[in-house]
Length: 131
Image (cartoon, rainbow, N blue to C red; front, side, top):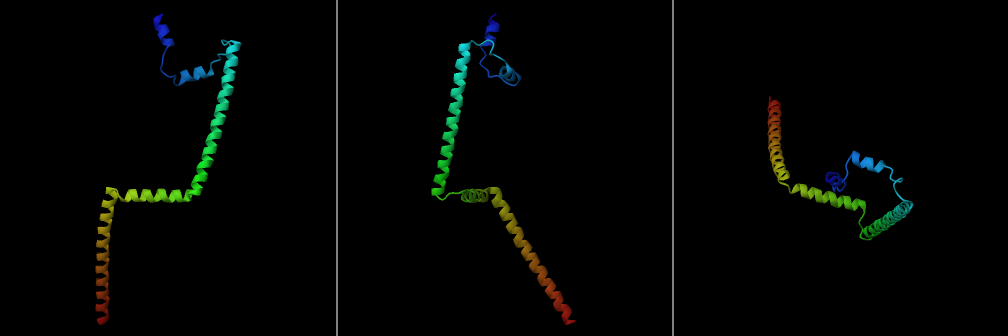
């Protein structure tokens, strides 16, 4: 009997099918009329509170937008600031610095190689003109 009583006092939240079973259960037949009225009143009160909270949130969001407009902050400026910060953060990473160094060095070598090729071609054209 104590094991059954212990099962009634579980503190773990319901999950999955247990939660669905409780949600779909019809408790109206075991509730007295007084309990039903109390629950209906609580339901109305909760719905009113939710409506009030939504209105307060909406007013605060409007106020936020007004403040941002007064400060000259708009979506485009925020995007620019976020992009600039992200770009700066990325440039300060070790991986970026190493990659930048490597590509810069490779670019210098490629420039030197193209210069040598250009010089060689010019020399060949010069030799061909002389003949």
